[in-house]
Length: 490
Image 1 (cartoon, rainbow, N blue to C red):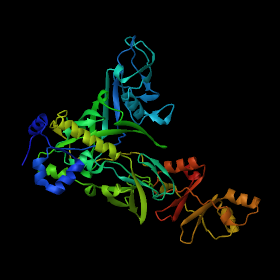
Image 2 (image 1 turned 135 degrees about the vertical axis):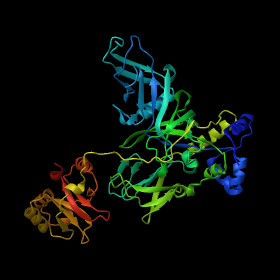
Image 3 (image 1 turned 90 degrees about the vertical axis):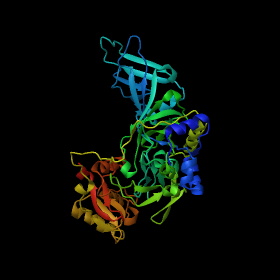
Image 4 (image 1 turned 90 degrees about the horizontal axis):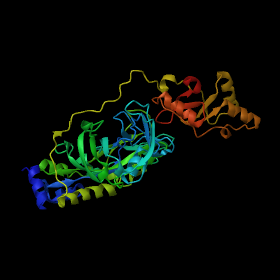
C-alpha cells in the first residue's frame, strides 16, 4: 500500500490528515502494528533542539550615503566575514567577541537580532571611487535590514556520541565540561524524535524539503558538511528567513573555556508513504545506538569503551567500567517535543503542507579526515626513559639518583610501576633547607600527565598552563612508560 504527497496534502487541506509525533508513533505501532499504521497515519512529526555549531546568517544592510564597501566589520564586537558584495556579511555562531570573548559570540548576535534587539555595526573600508566612505558606526534591528537569512551548513546530526573523560584532568570541550575519571557523561540529540533517525534512508528528506526551523519555516538545501550516513552520522544543510523566527528556538550558548554555539530548533515532517516509512518512524530510544567515546585520550580515533542506547542515556545514570556515571543531555527534550507538537498542530490546521524533495540526498558518502602533509609529532616520538624511585624510598636515594643521572625529575611509583607522584631537584633542595627527611612530605601527588599518542603541542600547552617542566607518560593502567620534559619540547 502506498500514498502520495498529493493525497496527503489534500487531507491536510480538508482537515482530515492524521498526524502523530515520532514519540506517539512508537506507541501506535506497538499497539496496532505496521500495516495499520501505514494505512491510518499520514504524517509523523519530529523535532530536535540542541547545539549546532555549524550555523550562521547572511545579512544585507543596504547602502550607506555615501556608499561603503566593507573590508572588515563587527556586529556587537563580533567579527563577521566579509568577502561578498559591498554590504553583505556572514556571521558565524562560533566566532567570539573581541571584547567579551567566551561570554558572547556570533550565536548571541543571531539570538539578539531575532529577539528584536538593536545590533551595533562597525565597519571600515579601503575605499574606492564608487565606495568612498571609509568607516561606519551605527546600529540596526532585524526590521531595518533587507535580508536576514539563517544559513546553516551542518545541522540535525543523525546522532551524537556520548562523551566521557578517563584522564585525571577536567576537560572543556564542545560536549561540555567533562570531569576526570569518568566523573560524568554528556550526550546530545533527541533520540526517537530526531529527524534523521526517522528517515535514515532519505526517502522523504532531500533538497527542497520544507521544515520547521528556528520557530519559522525553512528548507533543506542539500546534504550537510561531514554528511556520513553510512556511519549513521547524516547531516543537513538548511536555510530560512530569520525575520520569521523566534529567539525561543535560536539560543546563543557559552561552553566554559571552549567557546560559543547556537542551539537550533529543527523539525521535519515525515509523510507515511508506505509500510517501510511507518516502521522506520516507529523507532524507539532503545533501538537507537551510539558510542561512548573517551575524550581523555587526545586523538582523532579516540577509544570507545562501549555502545549504548538512548533509553539508557535518558535514564540519568549509565554504567561504565563497573561505575555508575551521572549522564546529562546537551539537548532539550522539552523543546524537541514542543517542536514536534507545534509542527503537528501546523499541519492539522492546514498551515503547513508537505513537498517532495527536488532531489534526494546521497546515502553512500563517508566522512574523510584531514589530509596532513607534515607529519605530526607525538609524545611517543620525543619521550625518554623515566628515572623512577618507589614511594617507600629514602629521600637520600632520590637525591643521589638526581645527581648521578644529572636530571631534574624523579617519577615516584608503587612496585607495580603505577604513578604515585613526582619529585624535582628543587623539591630536594627545599627539603634539605627545611630539614625534612621524609620523601612523602615533598612528593607532588597531583601530577599532570600525558600519553604516548598525545600531540606534542598538547603536551607543551599542559606545561605552560600548569607552570611545570615535565610530564610523566602513562598508559591506560596508570603505569609509567616514560617522561617528556621542556628540554625535549624545545
